Length: 284
Image 1: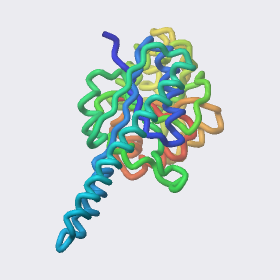
Image 2: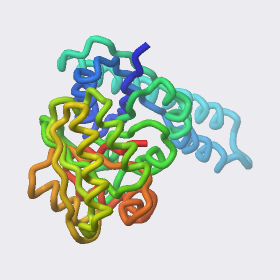
Image 3: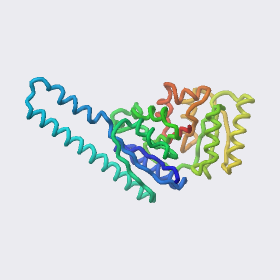
């Protein structure tokens, strides 16, 4: 069975973009899409606090009324979740995707992703969640947790989907970076796209050799590839390059051994993804 593209939708302004990115990936991979909406534990915890705060001396009738309100709210939250999934299905259907499943789950989103990711070729998530318009300087609270925990490639969707033709690969010469290049070479997602492999640092003989190896691997797979070296801090240099050279997607290994490593597991993770106005693919 072909691995699924699992798309996380939460009803935020990023959900439509997540679906459009999923449709593009489905077309290139020939894979089905599963839409996943997770009802977090927090949504039920708020109501538990409400009844608990009046426990001493409260009338039984009031407690029963609160319990009924809790039940009603839980039903409404579930109805809303199903409506979000059906809206997302509609976007995929209009984009020509035929194999679509939906899944409504309760619990922690990271634990849920861990349970279902064995079935996934890729996992898609929006850059921000439901509170995006109220916290433009922050990434979705679950994004970094999922990036850290997932064993599959994670695609972080930008706010709007744009056609993808030109891809920038951040390459640091480490095992993870070469593995990412190998995945790109093997994946139908990148077939026919223009790929540029770039290292942030100094053009030493070792760096040049690593870039040439990456280029050779991609070209052996029929992917047109160019290489380059840029100086500066990785988040700033790569973000600037994406914008100035009109790249449509940034791809990087999730772990490395140089400064690019800090983009994923350090404090500049959010800075990189926030500054990038294109989808970011984090290879495992």
